[in-house]
Image (cartoon, rainbow, N blue to C red):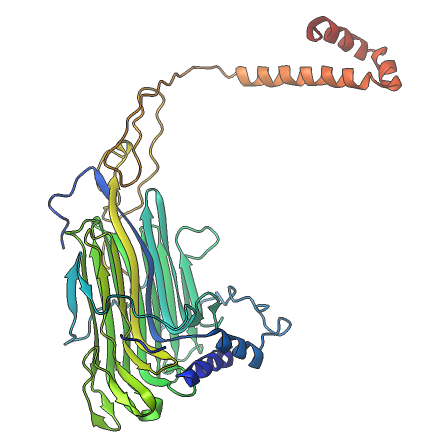
Length: 478
């Protein structure tokens, strides 16, 4: 399977589409609660768009044989058993590294209504991309619905799935047949050259995903513009705490070499952080990409974000200026920090990037909950370093009296129609008596039906069916 991944990366590289590249608000209503949907939070070491021709070429060069593939060519199937050495394994409750900006990072902070970079999100040549060392998470709380899931993987193709079944983890807190924690390492029992993947999701609305590599396992791309690093890590951590939704993303590569040594860097680090209480005043974000110790052809160079270096053959290399779009009302946030890129007229290849798509807001709290902000709490989070809120329980049912009902989600207020409900006390004999009467009527009707036949009429003349027929004529038949 690794050979198949390299075929995809090599074919894409040979094409080498140009690109341009808090605290809650004081006026916050106590009768509303936070709702949000982080549809995608992605951090990757390497990303390249794949054209239809590239995918078809890879399938032709190395087709999957269901008879030989242990997963029958099913991209949704993979190895689940934990296999990490004790020195590396985090376990189901271990604390993983947290996304933090590298020392000296030049990050940009902002809030609702702020926009950075171009007027539109930097496009990719195709919506189908190959991602290596990918961490991907989703978190949502909409009404009574909670979502917390994601994955960490060596290689992943959008709209297709994982490429390396032995180097892949997934977790989902709210799907019964899915694991809430998985951890994998490759190769097994190697603490020097290894790749490590962790996925964990909890019903306290927290999801954490880590993909890290060391030495020989930190190889990205294929023929053309590939890269090797001594170490790397991508992290996505999403959680709700204290009435706010938080997102922390990081992609970090250390001592990385591109294109066989033509370009080097001591560190390439991208971080994205955001937090919101669902109001315009409560939205905060920070984003930045830092490259330390850049050398081209052995000579030190600087690459300010958005100012690429022109190379022979129409190739550009540069640090992508972050693109951020935050709506005026604080309800929508889009962040693209693409990291370092190589771009030609045919293809763009990205290294060390992170992206976020999220919507946030507030909705009225149904009176049955007793007010409050819905999900605030003091629960614990092993990966989040603190107490996370819990998903509110279903509203209790009532047996009598008026039953207030909330209006549409996000509407101006609640509508309270009156509903009269009566409670009738019944004894334990009602149900058996009703069932018994139904059984008797059913037997009588059945016997009348068989009377259509000669053998049925003879049956009616025999006891006890003769007595049953008399009862039918006397009490049932009108």
